[in-house]
Image (tube, rainbow, N blue to C red):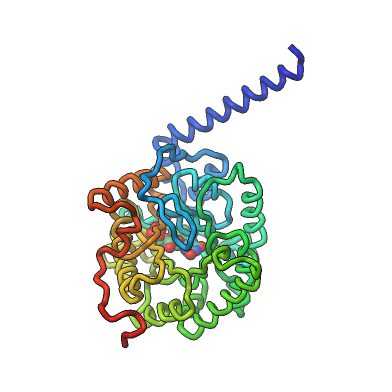
Length: 399
Ligand SMILES: Cc1cc2nc3c(=O)[nH]c(=O)nc-3n(C[C@H](O)[C@H](O)[C@H](O)COP(=O)(O)O)c2cc1C
């Protein structure tokens, strides 16, 4: 046999065998070995290791097929299922395809700031083990929009490698920027042609004064600007080809503040609202009292009811006319179903993934499919807002 052919055969054998080994390790050893090991490390090191594992194909893939009723169309885009990865996990767009292959229907990259910045000093992520919750005060650590947009562009240039799924980008501002509008403008320009949707994040509790951008006048001014920038950046594209613009809000708003935000979104025909970011509240029934004293945003189960109440309110206020992405404390199929029935068309999660590992995504999808079919729904879309009684007076005609 010619030497060349022999070498080719050996190469093929090595690649196939190592591929199989990696695949088997990922599949068989994630639960008993990698997951407990990650829990022993400090939360940010564990997170960095999880990203490294994902980048190198060491997370188990979802080999099942989703029930067809889970697929849905939102903003004219097809979602294979409504369960997405929330912002904060893949801040730098390093492992989008790996996370889509674990079964997520969509991934929200970010938050990305225009210029690279370190964020707050470490430690800045804390586990509340007994509450299955997390407090973080990361403060937008970001490698900056140039690097992240290059990564996403590269991924799209190789369609054979890119997993099917929707990829949104969540935009933040640099800590020391005085002109917030300019920072969001830079983010929109950097990602308008590669993101399936854009999220204007005005609700992180860890960047000074960021949440002030939720005030009505400031918000209208900011959103008008980013819409104009998106449209100017993609002049030649049909409205359907432009990325929808969403706003991510805080769960710590008064009713009046919430009404102002919703009015702004409706007035400007914003495409959707992400409810919600982490909370600065500390519910009295938290078990880990000492860790709860850490400054930062709380996520996980203690946020679940707070975010659900907000989702219901917004669905009711808008007669279901504003697309809601429901996030906060989802760790089971029941939690996802509750948010859908409260008015969310799409669901996101992060904290539960850190505790449960990627197998959770499949579990939630299977459970959600069962719950929907048990209640006679043919599709997830049919269940959206089913727990909300809408007003008989339409939006815009109420006081
Ligand atoms: C460590 C950590 C970092 C986060 N970073 C961001 C971020 O950069 N941008 C953002 O919009 N949300 C961020 N979030 C908030 C999540 O996207 C989500 O809104 C919140 O955690 C509630 O969902 P969960 O209970 O499923 O985690 C972060 C959350 C955690 C735990």
